[in-house]
Length: 312
Ligand SMILES: [Zn+2]
Image (cartoon, rainbow, N blue to C red):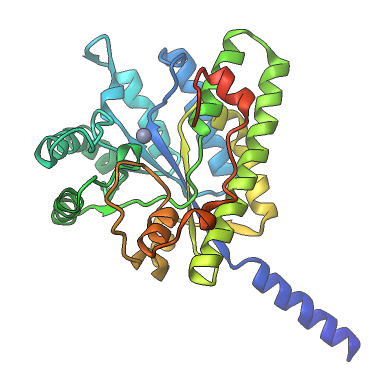
């Protein structure tokens, strides 16, 4: 009897332990980073990323800025090849607008023209891999800074067969990457390791924070969407990030699966300029104030210094 109960308890705890789900998303494909503009530096980044994602069976989606296909004003087939490598690895791509245009600064007409220009350059690539472009990720996470702009873009996206790709785990991986880039430039491998270790620790705190925000807001841990970028630090650390996320009993799922969670139907009437997590949008819409957001982990000072910025 004792044995039976023990077995039952283990089975139950395993079942509960694996209920957390997360989708990893990568923005600014093919590759982003001030120092990684040359194809010889970009190719290893994509190959490392796709290799690790495949090894951990992570069904990630990457959001493309097709303007990054150009070198010196000419379309560069080697850059397009980077996205083909991503698709060859069985991973999905979505649209992130052509030029990473900021919706806070332009009209809906101008924004959607840029979005369609991006689509025209990536649609074929997806089609050649038996896929279509189904998701749109807002550059800077800007959905629109007035109700009219939010509504008109949302309508446009729906009419053009897009689903919005929200983010729940927002973070400053791009600042860690800028710091990491400066260490690469100095060929300082000790500093690179220090930044890498700090980076994984920071993302672990972010994961825990947004998990807790979901618990506070919805009384359960929703299926999460992690925002990352196609950059050097993630190429080198996505394996450690994956291990960390697995230690927190998550399993990696597609964006389709994540968006089945009813939490994503929560109203968002945050019509301000900031690009923030959808969990923050929903909390602010629900009238939550400063105290609710108190514990958000900050980017360490030495990372800000190395990245050459004053604040997040
Ligand atoms: Zn972006």
